[in-house]
Length: 231
Image (cartoon, rainbow, N blue to C red; front, side):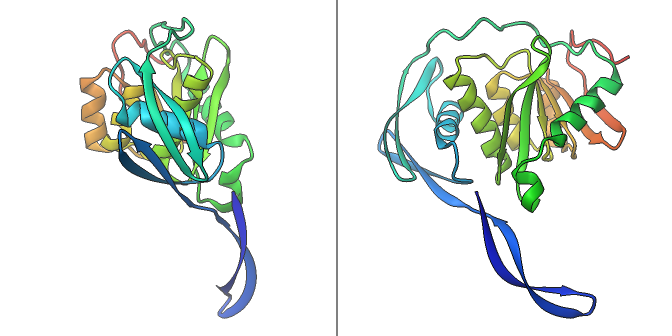
């Protein structure tokens, strides 16, 4: 997912030739009902990315995506009636202390990955309190792709996302939150900023929205009904 390249670095008032690391980006084509959709992504575990994108952006309600053909970075996708996922329909709950949110955010960012090599990648993960662990962890050069990847992994493993807490490294905009809402996740925690459009959507859709979760602090922009309070 990474490539070594030569470049000129300017440092201490002079240039020098160095070898640096950059992220590999590929164009991914998804063919659905004779229409081609294009994504730009890190070229790894593409099945989850394609299935997640198709589920969240292309399919009719009550259907799941199926990849029936692949050629390189081009995928042909169809849809089937929804199968039954594992029972995990509990109401989202945040019956934990504020310090636990910060502990989870630190744990979320502590794992070494593509993020650390280039600073070019976004990161997302879903924490399930029942299992006391992050059940899905993904990275991608595009923040929207991270949500697609999480959705795709939940489909591949037949696990519901409702009841989980989503941690993301990226800012939360309305376009990103719209995608998150489609996954069924009701709790979103970002180490970055939140926009007014995202806040409006969070209020309307009963999403607990937390931003700036880093450096010993976080801001609760919206707390959904039944989510409880932070101790």
